[in-house]
Image (tube, rainbow, N blue to C red; front, side, top):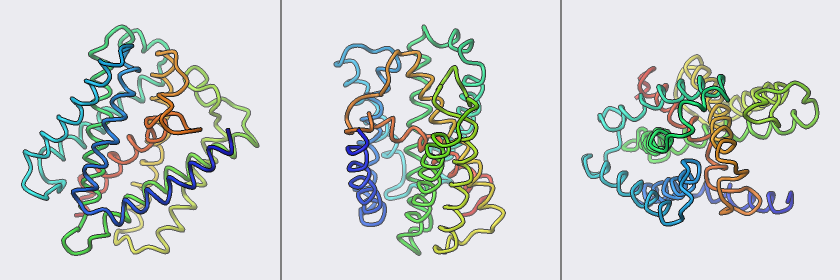
Amino acid sequence: MLKSRLITVLILIPLVIAALFWLPPLCFTMTIIVICMLAAWEWGQLAGMASRQQRIWLSVLCGLLLVAMLFTLPPYQRAVHLPQVATSLWASLAWWITALLLVLSYPASAFLWHHSRPLRLLFGILTLIPFFWGMMALRQYHYDSDQHAGSWWLLFVMFLVWGADSGAYMFGRLFGKHKLAPKVSPGKTWEGFFGGLVSSALLAWLFASLVPLSVSAGTLIVCAVLATLASVLGDLTESMFKREAGIKDSSNLIPGHGGVLDRIDSLTAAVPVFACLLLLVFRTL
């Protein structure tokens, strides 16, 4: 298992970095749409769709919705000031605050949504649509003057998430004794949580010292800390939905890593929250 995980990581990370910096805007957009469609296919299982055909239709509808939203925008414009983008990012903040309340009150909160497929599908929409627009808004950041400025921001967020995940795993294995959310994810500990925050902070500092991100230190710290906390919440939220669905992994699409949602659950929260804070709250345009 560990060998397959390492091999997959060694393959995926270079592919992700190459996609961020080398894919032209249209190809990048189509790639993220495909990722969202695969994630929607897996979310169908979390929403209680046992039929493969239903989940395929859910995936197709997700793709069509994203394409339809793109067609409402001016050509090659994904700027955050456009209402479709801004509304999605603000909705993301509202959703993840709600998700935090659901996680903190679980399993009592499951009474509100466990038997409601439409509500669980809505949760999926609020997870995947803002994630898509967060990716687009950050990738579009100052694109006219520097085609790679947005790529650096996206890579920065990914480093935050990778640092938090890796640090939490290592510190949790070495020192973990106190459970973080035993009713949601018994394997996570407070020691791992704080270890992840420290690891994420160190990576953020190293990244910011090497890459000119052109933003004040205070803004960067606030956005980085809240995005890292959001990434932990994204992981816990998917764990909560998987626990209610009675499954361990969202799928087996990625060898040794489960499904697409298992790999991007932290990013689905961190990316739109970071984009909303950076571009809408602090208006770093």
